[in-house]
Length: 441
Image 1 (cartoon, rainbow, N blue to C red):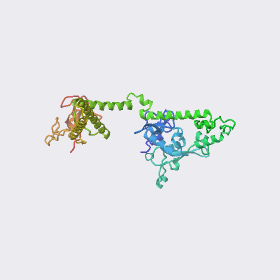
Image 2: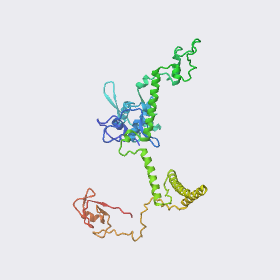
Image 3: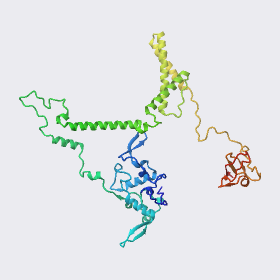
Image 4: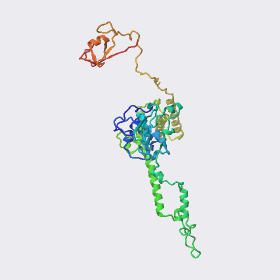
């Protein structure tokens, strides 16, 4: 699918990207990027199946297909390369140069100023826009003959951008790692800051070897401000990770504030309550038939089997307690309990499952086939009786007139609407429209 705005005129109310992106927003003259009022961020929320909402998306991923394809191609064609987190769509990367060349192909000519000040129009001819993806320039006739591919690596599609302020302030040398920073910090500590061993005349003064409970940070005498800053950063990092985990499980604040929001905990307890009610209902009715497991997952079938086994164990335990009150032989109690359990499980396994209906694509309520005589209908016109009735009227739906009789009884204007008030010759209801029915030969 290419660019669909080749024949659309350029209006003053249009944003610069409206025609170049083929934006599908019809209610506004702006494209998706110019109409987006969200604050800029490095990452945007996206939903991943099995994970939830995570901050891994881009700003233009929720735009229409054409705008999303436009910005994907323009980001790939930016030189030097630009990461998605560094963009500020639609201003960064700047597309002014690309749009000027695109509109030259759109209008079909390029204006060149001569030395004497006159304007000369040079024809610009390229491949049809419906064969060009949004964000790319059409290929010329020479390029089409040479078979050059039209992608982001094509020199005509490349756009040279200015360096960002953050890139200019970035040091040219390699960045210092955490290990190097710690080594440099240790080297800056003077020998006077580190506690030295006690002199001979003061044997009671503790040394570093005599204080095993002393922390490494205290041994190096690091500043308290640095320790507090490190602890603050760690606590902030833990808080951010905890918020991300809560967002993945329960959703964002907007999701929680919706009227149809349902907590995962509520869903969990509702399922457990439903299973408990089903087990109680089967226990109250005395139904020993195993519930149907057709269409259930392996986890659901396992839950049902565990419920049945738990019910058998409960009944066996109550029977054992009653027998224990009457007899004190533990061997007989255990044997009777085991026999009852085995008999119950064997009986449940031998019960045949009800046959499941065959799954077909047809409606199961379809009646049996009709005979040829029942499917034979008389389609003679009920007005002239010499032509086939092929005109149906609405809203009653009767098809009782041929085309020639319908022109007399129900004359129409604009192909379907009656020119004057008319009634159906079969049921005498008012006619609102008429249609011609084409039957199979």
